[in-house]
Image (cartoon, rainbow, N blue to C red; front, side, top):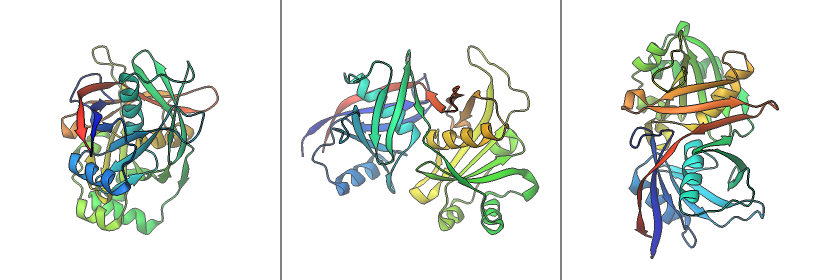
Length: 286
């Protein structure tokens, strides 16, 4: 065991303690899978990451991402938070206009615009759920079929059962049966478009309200979820249900104020952005 640089970062917020926290071990060399997983269970955050030298020469660094329940090939808030921590610790990108992160899903491009980072959403696989699967998820969430506008299984590394609901009020009122969701083995993302988006203070108008339920990986509700917002954007923009640029809110029911900035560029690539704040800079014995 040795002392290793460590940061705890709040992601998808410009105000500390209002987003989704991430634990980042800045030097994960020499740590085995068991040690990484045990530490991720100990932090008990939705994700803990370990930064490593890249295996692909074009990458700036490599990241491994662990939840309390297992390793993920890719996740959004760990991508932005790990990149923020790497830069904060003095990391220098090989290219001036992009940071290239290596993870189990592959290489992920990250752009930097002033203090805000944005990652390129990975390719999305999507499919229509079976009527039986949809009915089981609706029952676990306490939903009636008429309240669900559309449903898709969304896979961009993590797999989410995505539901578009009839109102933001309904999204915020949900009280899922997390034990049933765990038995079903599905992570569920629910969203609804605001009927009258209104800009508040200096913030842009919030177009989408999002919640993420992930009992199968040990997190009943995730405060702010990059991978889910990425796949929701790819799905809903393609179906013309959302504009090509918008801001999503997540975490309202957990006293958080996560803000996810979505934009689709001229080539059709969806970018998922957000602010990050370093809350803890220290060392950890691992």
